[in-house]
Length: 241
Image (cartoon, rainbow, N blue to C red; front, top):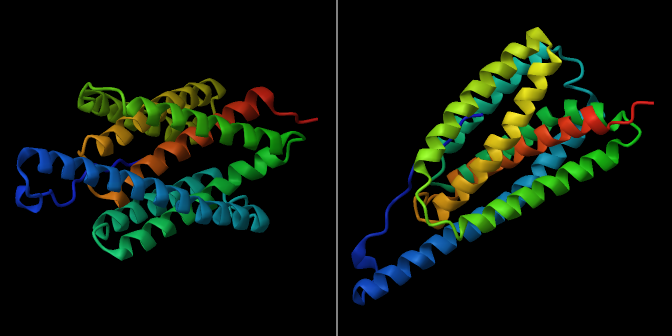
């Protein structure tokens, strides 16, 4: 998936009278505000995701598409909507665009959910994947508050890895190789778990000052970790009898 890393307006020194102490306190308060807004919008974004997934499962819309067509719809829709979110991130329209994007992503998730729900233990697998994703997020978010090292170098490495994985997963739509699929899923799980650390730390450090962009990035991390974890659970723990 695409990544965003664009900064909003920077805080100006004259906004915080009282010398360096007042400036540092103001910057810290501003970063906490962005982080709170990000977490609140992230929680809100789960509502349209669940709604989109439910509609997709009930209508079977994605199931009617072949793998190739659904991949094209996913890529065009996801990148198109992400572009809209980035273009409108400095206004209230950005929130609406983000929620529209998360609804679309929920709709795209319905194909996988329908397959998992077709298993006897499908409900348990979904809850396990959700719990595992939440645990990974909690661990990475906590780690982001204590790590002092600059992670910009790691972010560049992860971005390259994400591009390679995306190309491999597109190719595997036509190759249908189980080995490639497993390798891609493990890579996605590792890459986007690490991206959670990088993206939360960017907000904590003040490198990301727009909570809509921050939410978009972290949402993509969560989405990719959840889908990879759910597929791995389905492959190794799914009850198909």
